[in-house]
Amino acid sequence: MESQAIPGPFAIIALSAAALVYVLGRVIYLLYLSPIAHFPGPKIAAVTHWYGFYYDAICGGQYVWKVEQMHQKYGPVVRINPDEIHISDPDYYAVVYTSGQERRHKVFKHTRQFGAPDSVLGAVHHDLHRMRRAILSPFFSKASVYRLEPVIQDKVDEMIERMEEFRLSRRPLPLFEMFAAYINDVVMEYAFARSDRRLAQPDFDPVFLNALTAASDMCHWVLHMNWMLRMLQSIPVRLARLFNPGSSTSKISPRTKKVKDQIRNIQDGTNRSNEKGLHRTIFHDVLDSDMPASEKKLERMWQEGMVVVGAGTDTTAWTLVVALVHIIIDAGIRQHLEDEVLAAMSDKGSLNLSDLEQLPYLSACIKEALRLSYGLTARLPREAPDRVLEVPGTTGLAIPPGTKVSMDAVLMHRHPQLFPQPDQFRPERWLDNPRLDRYLVSFSKGARQCLGINLAYAELYMALGAVFSRFAVADGGPRLQLLNADASLRAVEIAGDMFLPSTKSGNKYVKAFFS
Image 1 (cartoon, rainbow, N blue to C red):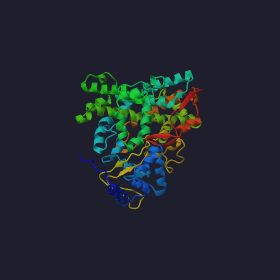
Image 2: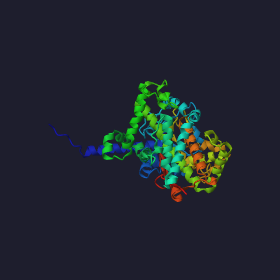
Image 3: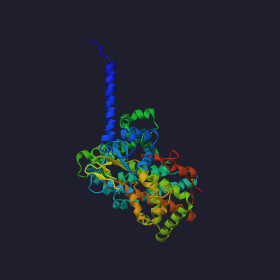
Image 4: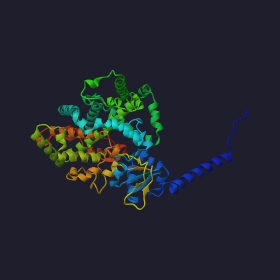
């Protein structure tokens, strides 16, 4: 039997030369022959994704600031990697994230970051997204939110009771954990007709919140190396419990099984809770639709449910933290808000959601909190498959069909011409200035705008209205204060893009107390 030949020096040289020719050829193509070669930007960004990977994965979500520097140097349209154009013109947002029938596809790898490829969030193709969204949209309409207002009010009342409990016991109140529990309970009750009752837990049961934080920490690694997520998902739950019994995966697994069991029981007809309860679940709506059978499989429906809960929990809870920190720190803003809410209550006795939505200063505070909490900080690239996108204000720059084009909430919400002194919390900028609303993109815009926008606004109005009426300093109520004002401010100041905002303090944990 002949031994296998070992490549000689000539073969090694030939392979090396071939690799070098390939690399040089690709660099030449990307710099000079690519359909987007004429767009300005750093040469290194044009030839490799590793440039962005370094700033995002290694440096912790810093590429957003590098992109900002590119715009300062090259203008409103820059090439930020081999196949993506980034735009900083605020008026162009409505073109990239358009409404109506004009198609916009998502970018495949950006739909695979969080393990829900079969959900509405994971739909790459425009038409598939539209089909999935059409079934869920009525469930999250303005009318549906008003109809299910009692569900939200029950959780608001429970949250205020927990705040009273912390006041009486003189314990520090963890704001992010409390608000995340409130939002999570609302969303689960709203979508599943049941919740994990996190508000009732002594520590607000932050397991789900911690899991979202862990996913955020890994987002850039998974974006560039999706095999990492698949590898983690392949680890048996029993093995994960054995090696790390306190991990979020170990603790969430039993609750995941609950959701899957609920779907299975609805599918086979043994779960008829919707006939007795206040409302149906999103699973009833999907199963009763005329969607193909493949869209009604257990795994897909479970992914849809998890996306609804996950997408709504962290972002809305963080908006409440940002609002509370800034309002408490600024005595003038706090007094103005409390005066408005208390005056409305003196006229009507109690305020429902519709009443709260009519309060201009409360609305301005919510919009400013949304601006500074950003929603998702990630770039959300889109592809326009059917037409060339003309770039206004440029000389002959046209974006070819199928090109990845992105914008982001961070640069939109910090645009100095729209929002002077962008780091400052200034609710008055929204008063009598309705044109600014089009530039508030915490929920994105267009056909793929966040499904839960109406529910999120309801949660914000009702929570802030309750907190600043029950604990109004102007009314002689208990004074809600921050445990450390300077540290709290650092905790709500953005430091980078980890899909969700990372902060200058390194965490989002803010504590308050009653004096």
